[in-house]
Length: 397
Image (cartoon, rainbow, N blue to C red; front, top):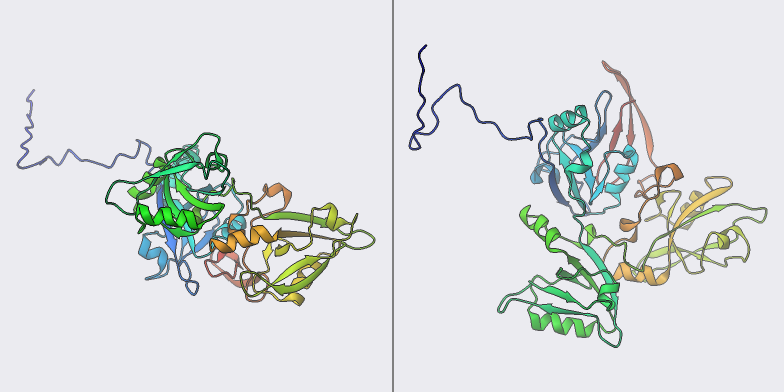
């Protein structure tokens, strides 16, 4: 028996046709999720469609627009969407996922897995949520000063700008507001601190008076975004510790009606809005938690942004004896305006079994439209158009 000896010459490299190197995919053909921060102008789209297709699992990225935002960032046809703004969505109803993206406004963080890896993971029974980090969201914290101050101090390397680390006083205002010790400061009152010197930051804090809003990220979160070349913004933030909330009110009409009046008035943020007034004691509106002065944001899961008074009333009356409203009180409304973000962006949708979902943006006609498409070789197809700036959904039953 003859033995062929193979010698490796580092100057030449590997020259053996029987020896191949392959990318390590955990031995199971499953790659790693990829993250994309898509930012568009208000007149743009994100440049892709999200499909639900017969015989295929998951939310599928399709029809990537040539030269569009999605293509420029690197999304691929056939990618499966796993996460939207840090929320795992693979198990969610398709329409709810679309609504989450639409509610993100002009910026959204997506986590995707290539189609082959997705199919391989599914065939192996892998839990796809385990492929993703537990918490990759920065935090938005609103701090009220007490006699000890804001309860944090800022350190910065000498001679540098925009690099600020926070030391947090235990049980102080910042600690109670949810600021993690040792976190990095990214925004102050809605403005990036990237160009601030330590002196400028101190001046801005003094000008904040008795309250300040910070966008902060732990070292792990900051490192996650930095390694991927992604910019952390408030649009991606965890707002669960904020005192400012969108409230969901479910009203069932009684013999005397709902018990409130709706009027159109000027918003503090400019433009006009629909406000709730004359809430009658003991009637469904009051029992549901409605307060005079609340502004209506959405009716039955659909945003009323851009709708006038008559259109909003029509939405409320669309269901004969019940209605679900998303509302916000004046103080919370003013807060979100001050940081330049829509409160709907941070509304946490309920469990799908409750019938509630993240509100979607209005279509030009005021509601989604169902289009019938010519029957093709794969059978009848219906396209459910979400009619939003960002994407459309296509459902193939």
